Length: 385
Image (cartoon, rainbow, N blue to C red; front, side, top):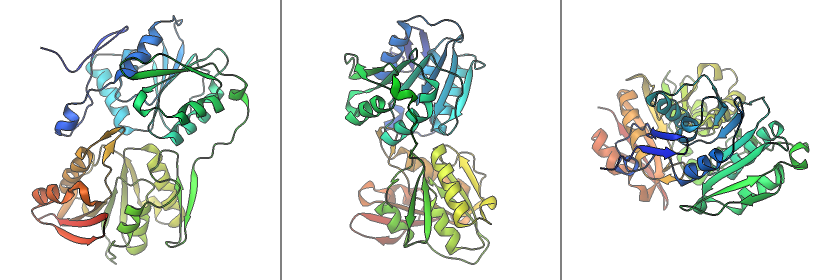
């Protein structure tokens, strides 16, 4: 019988999982690695690095890379994903791997030591890749091996252009199992001063707010139409309510609620560190005297939320996790929200009409109200009985 969790590389065999809480068949059938991880590790094993060599791993999905590499390398693990970071730590522990040689950084953290190897799993977002190249290139020299890995179907010409722009000329490996590597030897480009364009600021005159968007935040350059529709349906109140903006992104929904509910305390949840940093700045500029009453929580949906704490939760759920499309993240959000709501508390959800959120929400809560709808989006409200 084939063990679907057994991952092998030139560095040895591991048991890896996605460390997911969802019971979705879609996600349960997915592995915690891809062919790009395999190809990258094979390349890293093909050349000898001295003990103490420093390697920066960016965007390691679920820990396949950090768990595989030898403990006598010094590793900087850099990710914008709380989920990826937690999965990597869980897989290290499950495989009885040491962690003392690993420095853990969020996407906004900045390693400081010169690098022998910069290894990047290409992210879905080109803006995140651009931000990372600008952050990490001061750590590179002509002796640094730069290797980017990705599945061919997700590689864009923009990724090659960005690496060449900020580090130097690129070349590629042959494709294997539909994966490919990009190699770069840093040249003068890596030492030329450059200004990081992120975070970007977006002034929304209709709402009298300026939004801060770090590089990995959804819809950085304009207000997306789903959020715009949701904002028009948000309720107001003068009560001292406890609210949550679940999957907060840049925090605009929570900030709008702060304006509509002047006595409310609002918690912002997201798995992206850049999203939470964006939300904190946006809230701090819009309501400087209230931001310290808010919490900005990196979480797997609302796994850490206390039961029956919120009067209302507002959610514009994602329909993908990294490059995987599916409703499993939204469904986990709905389950977590139900646990975290007080009896009589309400969950408000906006989504594309075709996603069918109403079916799962009605089964889970036993009631459902359609608050508003247009040709593309619908807003639902469910109440915890």
